[in-house]
Amino acid sequence: MRYKILTVDDSKTVRIIVKKAFKSYDCDILEAANGVEGLAVASKEAPDVCLLDITMPVMDGVEMLTKLKADPLLKSIPVVMLTAEGGREHVLKIAKIGVRDYIVKPFKEELLVEKVMRIIDIKPLSESTQRMKTIFDPADILVVEDKPAIVQQIQEGLRHTPWRVHGVSTTGEAIDFCGRTIPDLVLSSLSLPEDGGFTLFRMLRTNIKTKFTPVFAMVVKTETAAQQQALQVGFSAIITKPIEFTELESRMAKAMNLDTSLRYYGLEEGTIILRLPEHNTAVTINEVTGYMKAKVSGAVDTGVGRAIIDISKLKALDMPVIKLLFQFMQACSEVSIQYVLVGNAIVVKECKGFEDTKNWAFFDSLEQAKASIKGEPAPAAAAAPAAG
Image (cartoon, rainbow, N blue to C red; front, side, top):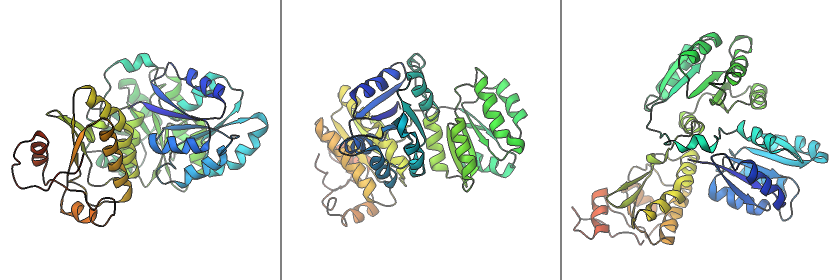
């Protein structure tokens, strides 16, 4: 999945400079002219970084930042503030709201790219011409942690992936490992003796072979000073202990630029199928939404005219999931794709409790849904299809 960078600035010239700066990188640039537009784009597109100007009409950068950080689905988006020289102190005052970094105007394109690359691992376009690896491809993950229990916990937490998780306990062992095998991603503890985590990071960044390897810092949640220092140094991400593995896996996949769409989207027998897992966090919903437009458009380009929304694995239905489903239905309707739903008893019952979903109808199985949209007799009795 291509990284998305949102630039929110009332100056068209600045937005042009941003687009020009990232022209040779594998990313999409989204634009907005004020905070209102910026929030709308952020909500729809879930960008990976937001470049936010402070002084704008309609809604300024401070108000947009405040609203962004108050939204559970948007608060994790890293924000880099853009300010004039006289506004530097103002940025530092509002940093506690949730600013990752700031840039003083006028700025050089190289500085802008450097700041963004500290947050997301964008690659030059020449490197993106190869087949994009997926979440199902193997990868080498190096964990640098002097507490064996944590290494074991990470190995167990990622056991369901095809990734090979290697554990070492010292900076020296980590460097030796990288000399033999270039890891796809490094998880380094910041509690190593003598600031070993920061030493390792600097050594990895000065080695041409690991210069662009994503390096995550692992730190206790309450150690905010270490977290801030890691962000300033340039770690790719901060992972707090205790570790939440669903979020960790998603952030690792994004940092390694892996295509995770196959978890949710598939093409079978001329039909695009959206499958949601048992539990859907904000991370999951952002991933599904991020791929949606490209997947639906790609399906149309290949002649697909049918869709199945399979939510039969869901253990519960909530408003974020309902909103996601409506987005997919709308995307299908806009390109004349007929859709039907597959559900389970829990989903059917919970749909009755929401005004917007009480009339949704479901098939009991994927086979029934496939037969219905082909116009074939269903293998067994099924509910009437949802309108599509």
